[in-house]
Length: 239
Image (cartoon, rainbow, N blue to C red):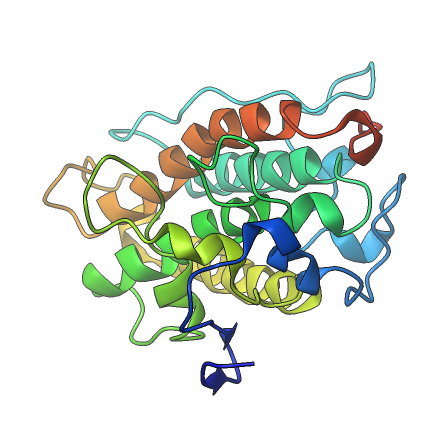
């Protein structure tokens, strides 16, 4: 097979993608984590749904309202982060097996769902680095590959849809590391201390709240892509 191997990004063909051969299927069958329902405890890289704020008496996790940036407490910010993070993982727990993570959407206008599983976590790290809130990235290859999605710009790289993507296990481990990084920031940053100054656009912590809202935007994006999958690849999550 032509193309150079990168240990993080996999093989990218130099020749045009052979959609007839469904080259994306090379990604299937490598996951070690159990991807049925219910998901095992290890699936949750943050809090499981039942430990999140927003989990109700009916056993469902609901989205929280955004915290007030003028008066939010550290605990409110932590609860909002955990709520959004786990909502993402709850949504992706509806995917059965690894095929739905890698199957490109039938219309070819978006990346496969593995991109959207990692993309919100990557944005946290990239934005926090720009704001000076973290000193280094976690995985430079991930933070390039999963940074840019699809819009109308001419530089969009739809050839990503037939590359050899990282395994779900590696993607899952990356999310675990990002969760720990963001959690430590929220728990320690002085601008979330009692009676802190309002958080404004020129505040470094604005980048953190951008990450929160960006993740919630992609709940909608990913939900639409999941609804477009073959029905046998999707099941309703428990929560």
